[in-house]
Length: 90
Image 1 (tube, helix red, strand yellow):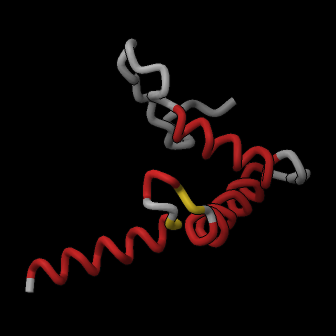
Image 2 (tube, rainbow, N blue to C red):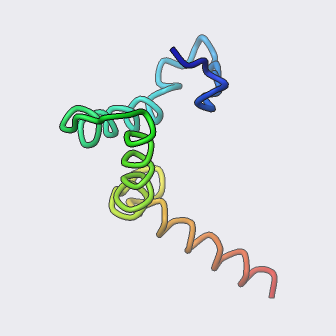
């Protein structure tokens, strides 16, 4: 079994009085499980990593809209943010 450091997982604690502290992480993990892990049978850890990262880059970051990002995908929000920063710097 691989340790947390080997697969680059960082344990982050939320405050005890915030019951929704992990909701964003839990939703992302659930989406990965439902759309990538559960429907597939992987032959190796490397294959699963490749498929998961490809899904994150091509599907999750481009297609999934998030309410906290103004119902934009991560990619759309980042582009808008970058455009705002450039405009403010000019």
